[in-house]
Length: 64
Image (cartoon, rainbow, N blue to C red; front, side, top):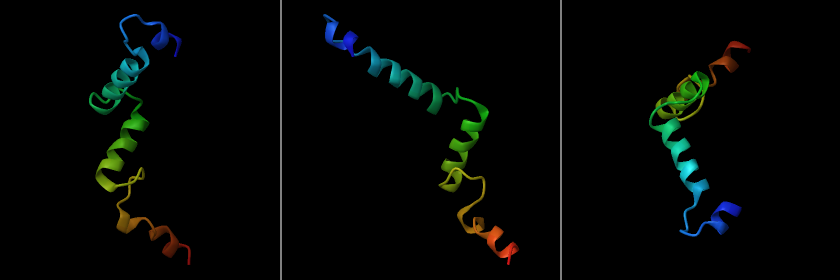
């Protein structure tokens, strides 16, 4: 945080870098493929798994 305290024009470089990274990942999908897949699953299924909520416990019925 030394840059924030020492900056004579009150620029917060950490906040700028964080927002640039957030934009690159969330808007431009510039992240590893596995993370992009997880974001897509969260958007479509409400969870990081590729299965819809109704199918999540199907594995339990297969083991009984």
